[in-house]
Image (cartoon, rainbow, N blue to C red; front, top):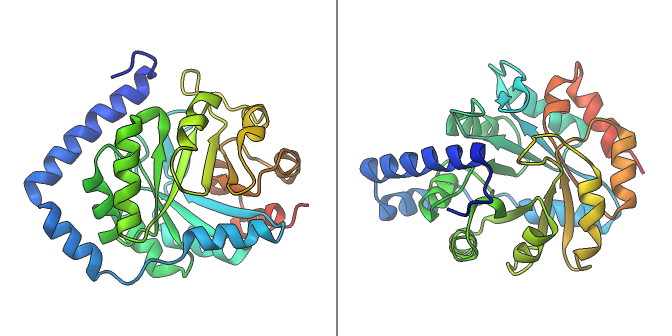
Length: 268
């Protein structure tokens, strides 16, 4: 693995490889693919984002997240479906569900529960290290997957993207630096995520999105991620060209998540 990969991410990727090995012992690619294709048709994640972006609105991707390495325990989230309903009521375009267990306290069961509770498209947010996980995501009801460029080679990124396209899944491609964004732009997905969290310090800085926004061509959608806490943050990031906003911790901590989401959606 590249020496530049932060140690905490290295640790996560190591146990992801173990999880994939265990998954291979429980099932096969053909079995997962059959389950994936039997699942109801994907909801149109990409279209939901692009439609709002083209209309000049704010496409909110609101996250169900129990905890994180940087923030610790965020919410017990014993009823993730209730949180998801609040996001939907507030006007979110899509919902992200963290399914990583060891570091984020999530599961595919959370994804399934949220899918039953809302009609919005769902992103499986996890650390993808093998195309098998893409089939697993679709079988569990995901409509989109995340590819984290800091965690994958260009070859693996293409394999994950191809697997997703073959299942009619949308792909959110996440970068943390301008170099990663250059690599991300080689993939055909129009959804370009820029994460404002520094993977070495875990601090967030909205200037990260501002510093690379000009690299994103007009035929792609800039989706800014992490550190968005208020309507003024949305206004600042809109000025940089963002039209998609992935909001997790601040939405989870809000006393009234629906009202909080509504305040961000309405910001111009």
